[in-house]
Image 1 (cartoon, rainbow, N blue to C red):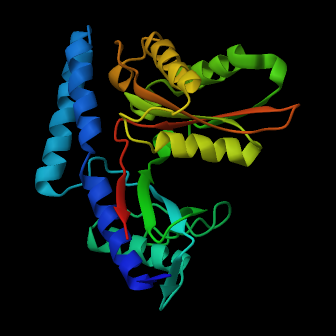
Image 2: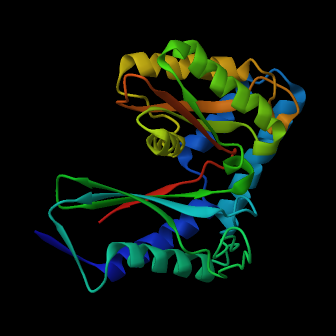
Length: 281
């Protein structure tokens, strides 16, 4: 049994919040540069150059890549041989988000209640937390700030098996076309297939938070990821919605077993600032 202090989790989450908001992951920066080389639209190339420069300034000045520093979405893989002391996991994560967003002077965007008063919590907590219990004695935490412009374009459709792969393609394509420039492309798109309503959405969220250079381990789904990316980039939405080849940098697909009568499909979009940071304790 490994013991981890709750305060260590709090500190790690605080540091990740600041890092994720101010430092574009290296694979994303490489993706921008590769897209710029392949973008036939002069306007699209210029926009990609501006996005690269913006990310460089954000990192050098420790400033947010985007003014919308988002909801703190936190994925936790909690080893079953870990014992957290002097606090509990969820409280430690919420405290870390508060510390990171306040100390890092990041915009606070969470409201305490969603419908009536909508009062800002002033510290960007609570976080959105997803926990998996896994073998081992480590805690792996991935924090992915999620802005509203892209999150608002999420889609969930309850298809039936007869809709098949063409139905899934249509859900993704309709989502991208409806999002248009409002999701600040080039996007990173997560697609979740299977499970139940909520599991499909969670798969899409996990897929959207994956690294740009990641590949689905199932070769059928890896091929489908490439096919969907090609389909999305044929829409011509382009960088920032002003036309071009690069509407998306990547489409990631995650799936889960489902009912014989069901085919849930969820799509979750990340804007060009597909931010994330990870720590292992």
